[in-house]
Image 1 (cartoon, protein in one colour):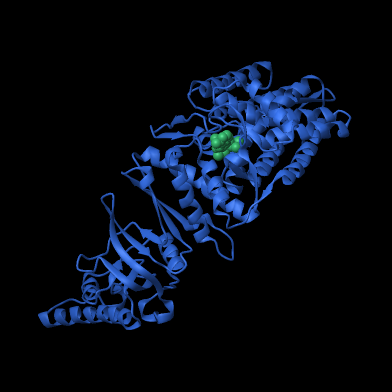
Image 2 (cartoon, rainbow, N blue to C red; image 1 turned 135 degrees about the horizontal axis):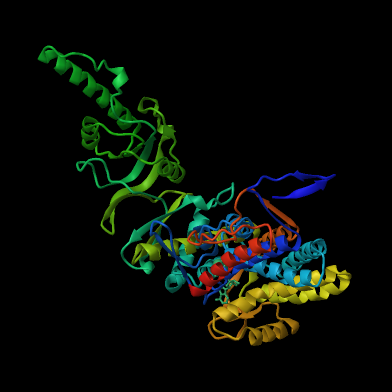
Length: 563
Ligand code: ADP
Ligand code: MG
């Protein structure tokens, strides 16, 4: 409850239930919340990062190394912590990879800011310095970025593989990387690249290296009747956004059948209508038809007689993929179909995938829509591989779009850090301290890569800095040996945008949190707990409240450490 004096009358502006935390307490609460989020994910960073197991209230288990997945599953409810979670979500949307890095940088920016705030540097000064540093960082990164051609398979494959490093896909990453590159190249068209046109079909059973790319579409369905052919070649494909049934409204179903002739006539009329539908398909030359609704038994019979392969109750998303892949146009009624509506596939076939029947639509001229069949031993394994593949699709798309990449393994961060320290001298004033803090903060990436690999972070950093001082902008940390190596030679590449976006979102989030000096919450403000078990909601609004908040945060840090 906040009160202000107005004359002798206290003016109550907030309701009884509201909580208010102001000034340094607010800053400190937000910084703590932000740092806690970072602590929860930092051990997953890099090739040697560990995984985390998350169990939700219903007992569902997710095992993952993916930053954004982790934070999403953790169900964080502290408002400040959520702003850091948003950093990873933006990163996911914009690039698909680098979600852990973005959050780790944001947390470190907050941590460094805290130190400066303690030295009485004003938050606005900090914010200004951070923004300047971020802008300078972007320019520096553009300068050290390497140009890549959209058809440079070698670098694209290396980029795809780097994004999968340290994930469940590690063992088969080279093979998966080339599947990912093929997939992205296949769906690219004049309008750009939409990775949603790469469908991922998860199959439990078999091993990861049996995964394959089908240039075409796989529909998780069987042909509607056993009497239909298993496959049709050089197939004209139709998509019908309707049912192959006699519509009840077209026939008087109320007809009360009083004599057998009447029934006979009724059935014949229905049969004739179905025959007409099938005739229509035959006339335009359909070999395979994908139907949105059901297919009447009698229609199935006629279709089978004509050697047409038919699939019913096809999902809209599948129909969309088939249309894109084969060039077919969906018709809303069979009677409207013309030859122009048909698509083409060299092969439409029902095949067995690990015991399940699927329809494969393959050998299409210009796929535009492809399916990656991911295999793996268990569901959890495949789910994690799927997440790695999603990251990988994202970086390949981004690289083809932007044509610029950077060597990884902490190389860009060390390079930036040195450059920003130089730049800081030119800034002067108190902002200089903020720019320096920003430079230090970026080194959290190589430091964490080293820590997670069980290396001494200080030794690693010293070596990296001296390599960069000596002019090797691509010097990074080999997480497997601990050596400082040329990451470009090693083929560890990431799109430029992974870094620029991470720095931009991390800076914006940190600045936003730093500029807040008042938190007014309607109702309870939980101390950034990540689980709901901890119900000690203490009243905030004073030192006691902060204590409660911190208790929650401590619990979270502990959770991160225990996993
Ligand atoms: P993020 O969610 O940020 O992508 P990752 O766990 O994928 O987190 O780790 C990414 C970091 O790991 C990047 O800094 C990247 O350069 C680094 N990295 C990837 N592969 C290697 C490698 N083979 N050697 C060293 N560092 C690597
Ligand atoms: Mg990654």
